[in-house]
Image 1: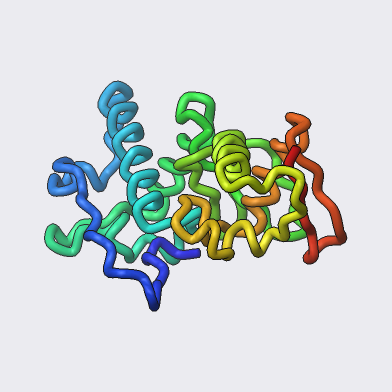
Image 2: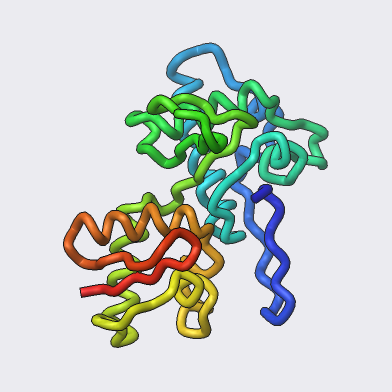
Length: 202
């Protein structure tokens, strides 16, 4: 998924995303060499990426596709974050220092080492990490009285009952990662074969 907001045909228009003040300063779009300044800048970029993706319900980014979007390009200033600097920002977000707020997505068949950049610079953006999504999903199941019911993955992210939830429209791969946390916690069980899975919450 690119950084462009997904189209929603029947929903009311969403309020425009409000960019932080530092988005209007040209130096923000070049990572600074001084360690203390760079650390603050990386934190600001991480916060902006998470906020932007949360606002637009974006769960993963392809840097190549996202660089020309408003997330990384301020058309008014005529400034963009370079691909190299964008990779550095996401690389920092994947680290313990960056709070593991991103994870590189490997291409199929490619075994990725922890923290290694995926081919094409594609990454999950964790404005909620999988363990946080697991907690949200468990709370939703409890709230809607669906404990003990087998739910399809499609129902969870595309069903009427979840239309107003933050996880509506979530990538299936990220949903599976989050449900895997529920299973490890003993709060759920996944059934079925790949592509037709269902899950029961306890």
